[in-house]
Length: 553
Image (spheres, rainbow, N blue to C red):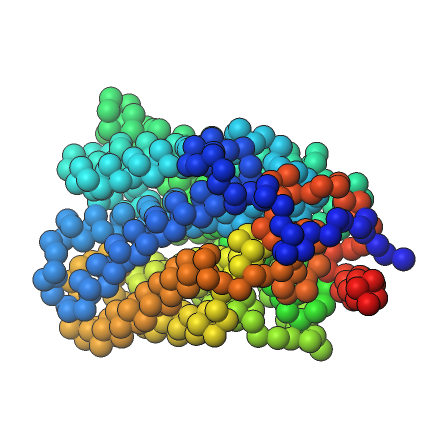
């Protein structure tokens, strides 16, 4: 019979005084902690701050685009707005969002460990993140950077009225935060799994974060090299990217996109893991094709390093390169499609319920699928020539990253919030927030596909008058979207004091994290679990619940 070692009864009525949220020694106990759960919460607070900062920049962009004339801010100011929006959202929110928060909190518990392999390095990664964020804020105070978040040469190497070096330093430091987090995850998964926790008993959330961690460790140093060369070119004129000195600006494009396209999967892979957990729980079924979904994460990590040049089709690469990278771009969509189809089959004939995390998961599937399908257009040379540098690109990227990653992040936060805090949030308001977010997102970004196809270029603060109606619709949608993002901040904060006690397993989910108390003990487990059942074994859970009911009777 499939069983798991009995864990001590840790009902919420008798919570020990040593759960990780207890603040017996004040703020310093948090700032000097080695507890992965506390570090995850530090990340959650920090990342939330930077998300709303990046959202402020986005709001200013949309306000400028309400009218065709650039009448709200000067062109240079507008350039700084969209640059800072991209830098903050990508490097300080999207890349660390799920791994640094949910991954940090859950991976050790999911595999039966008491912490990550290197607790001090884990804390150091948060401090590096905060130092990087401080440098971004410093560059903003000093006057901002206006090269775009991609730091394209020669804008980033030769123009003097922009604080590239300060911002590049921020990204360089924050990159080491990602590397350390990835290293910690890899070692933890390899070396600290509980007895019986084989690779194919691990939750898919762990698989996804493990694949993303490999990409962090292998890809981020390339970005660090590219940013360092940009800084050296500005400081001492080494000429690596300067044709006048024998350099080649395309070299920067190769270095930057070799990291930055895999970074898309660094951002989205952990989100895939969240969706697998949520869909399995709220359809009461094992994920269809578990092995295929697990290996598809590894396949994405592998293929992700071989498609960077599709960002460069109009930049002078050879026709042969275009052919090869166009084909590879189509192939990398296959493992993502496997996940979508397998989630759909998981839902089939399942006992599907529509709690808030599930609504966010459905939103993820719809928006990410649209983003992925429009990516196929951009991987085709004929369409890419027409659509590159238009708002079609902006819409595609946001459907994947914001519609996909942010919906997954919110699904995960709502799913594990009872475990993280021991409190429930108001279900009716949270469902409303999920619906508002989905509607606001469609209203914001779908019109941008249309104006992009019609030829409206991105990064311009003025545009032809015939595009105004669609831009007004997009700005109105952004207002709705902002409400959808603000609501969770309010009701989740409210729930910390006033929310109903969650209990150990409010969703009746499988997984080790649901077999311990909420919020967890500082050491996670009083007894090291011995795992014998597969992941998502709801038959085992039903037997366990029946035994507990008989014991109470």
